[in-house]
Length: 263
Image (cartoon, rainbow, N blue to C red; front, side, top):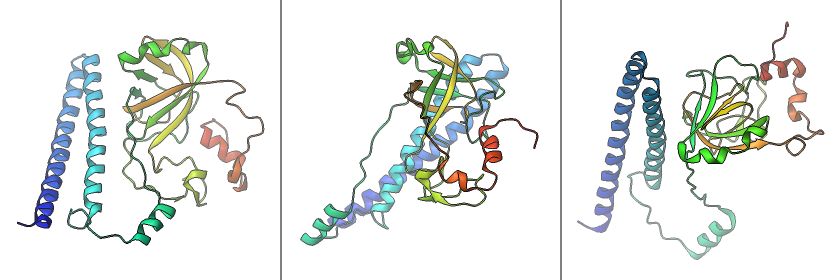
């Protein structure tokens, strides 16, 4: 067996391993969801919550496995590393015009809890119904010291349920078909699936922050929180950008903000 055949075999073995791990994890997720419901019905809410967190971590692991599988498939049509010899000019061209993206790893520091499992609002709704909380893992509890002195905070999270590939142009569902660049929008489908919300801090109990309405699904992995500071984070001369070009945008803003109105 020559070197090329050995590389191909190894690539196929790795792909099979990744597919097995994905399938195995998905089966565990289905089984765990059944157990969560039964444990909740039995009245053991805290244990059910722990299993929910395990499910969230498993979903995050599957995201990494999917990424690894895609990298393997993209390396060659046969899961074989490309061995194309580059000329000197090719290297210069790549250095000057092609940026190779670096891969960063973020650490989940907690879990966001909301009433939403299938649909969530486009933006946080201040007076939304239900219980909303941001729960940090126990080892980060000390980091909440003095946060209760602030009225609002930023919540940064991983948009873990999105499966769509990002595109550089997007049409917000409320923008009447207008298309804009993804970086001129609040679309969650972005190159990096990082979400950002500003919410009111209602109270903090140990490692859990109870908040006003959040626009995320229950079980969303938490990446970070930061205090929202008056004057520093509020710009009096901010505008509505391209949204002002939309017909009846004042009325549209009421819908986006979730503000009740009669017309």
